[in-house]
Every structure is written in structure tokens, then in C-alpha cells.
Figure 1 (cartoon, rainbow, N blue to C red):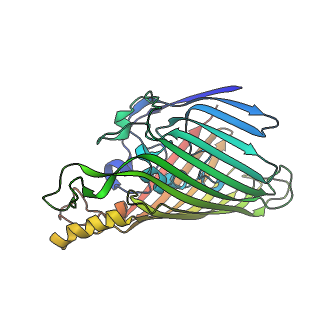
Figure 2 (figure 1 turned 60 degrees about the horizontal axis):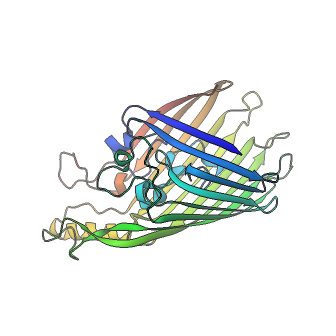
Length: 357
């Protein structure tokens, strides 16, 4: 049995939150400044990792909806916009994990199943930012309606030393049984675009979604398991009235250690697409009926390229270029000079350095 815990110490302001308002956020470490407990759990394994059980405060993004070829690219290529925006409090992912348990069963070298049950709203209900409701990661909530996650994976040539090209297919789904706000209608049944609308939203019971993931190594450097070229693609759907994003897709390619002189360098290119749900679009249409110039959200997208350069063992530098298309799905700029004008596309240049010791 093993015990694991980690803590975040976050400084500064995030670009997405404070400047861009984009759905596919710029950085996976973007969060409100705080010292916060993230994960704290125990893990028990049986057999040669045939069965693994975790229990405690857990994150889901490291095991669900993931692919090894999204490590370099954008934060939304990890825990994507469809889950971070549709799940209550963003779901169990950075910077807020949730109390829960997950079990992994490896049936053989090809087939495995993963299932998890989490508190469905780790920050609790409220109108402010979930990170303010769970500022230090110490809420430890267990009484909210649950979030269920499930995943079935089929993999090939993934055994160490296998000369074939590794790959996998994953089929996943989630169900949150919690209470959701209606994105269009107030509690009196009137659109929020109407001055007659009540201040509280109508309530919806639960939300759900499905997704599929494919990853494939297309080139392998001789004598290596991981070096080469890999591609990935993911699609997801959540058609509920409670879903801000009802369809999501991304795809990319990663080049890993192609040069013998730089075996640990990586280069990745990816693109992502998030479609705004029908309820949110209908609300924009209601506003546009009264204000014809009102922007209508439709989708947000992203193209990104990243290079990871290993300076020495344990030290990397990672320049990054991102082009953000239709931030906020094409939402109204809240501080722009022209009322009703949509947010502009944005280009982001960044540099991240990582030290491990």
C-alpha cells in the first residue's frame, strides 16, 4: 500500500481568466493564487498491477480522457474544455481534486477497465469562483450527488520491448447526478434575456457525456520504446441542456527524440475545437432579438505548437505558440470600446521551464 500527496503553491494571474476569456485555456497551471492541497490518497495493488484501488482526494485527469501524446500541448488537450466547463466545479482536475475512489483492472496485456466515483461538486454550490469556495483544497466534501466515470481500453504493442507500433483505443463516459443551472431560462420560465426574468436560474437534474480516444505510434526509433512519432484524436459529446459545450474534438502529432543527439527533446502540434451548446446559443439568440448587434456564441478553437528542449537531466525549457480562435465561443467583450463587440482572436507566446530533483 502506498500513500501519496501533493500541494500547489500558485502565484500571479492567469491569461485565460484575466485577459482572454477563452474556453481552451492557455495553461494547465493557471489558477487563483493560493497554497492548496491537491491530491492526498492511498493506493493498494494486487498481483502484478492486475488490480489497483485508490481512495482519498483524487484527480481524474491523469487517468481519464487522457493520451500520452497531449503532454506537451495546451492545457485543454489534457482535461478538455467539455469536462472542465460542463462538470460542476470543473470536475476533479487541476486545481481542484475531489474525494472519491477509483479502481483499475488489467484483464490482460490488451484490455483494461477503469472506473471512478467522486464527490460531484468538490467546491460546493455558489455563484462565485469554485476556487474561492475551496481555497485551500481542504473541503473534503462527500455528501454531494456523485460523479461517475468509466473507461474501457484496448491497447496493442504496448509491452516494453515490443517491436510493433504501440497504440490504443479508449471508450469513456460520465454521469453527474448533481443539480445544474439552466443556461437559458430563469426559475420563472422566462429567458434571462428578458427584463422579466427572475434572478435565479431554473434547475436541471444531472448531466452526462461520452468520449472516444485513439492514439497511435506511426514511427519508432530503432532500439527505443517511446522515441518516434505519435498521433492522437479525441471526440466527446454532452448534448444536455445543462452543457455549455455539447461537442468537443482535438487532434495532434508529437515528435519524440528523433535525433540521437537530442533523445529527450519533443515537439508537438495540435488543434482543438469546442462547440457551444444549444441552450447557450438560444440565450444569445434571445438577446440578439432585442439587440441585433449582440454576438452569438458558436464555437471556440485553438491551434498550438510546442517544443520541449532538455537543457540537462531534470531541467527543460518549453517555448509555446498558441493561436486562439473565437475566445469564449465568440462572446461579447466585457471591457471592449464597442458594446456588443465579440472578443478578438488572440496569439499567445509563452515559455515554461521545469526543474525536477
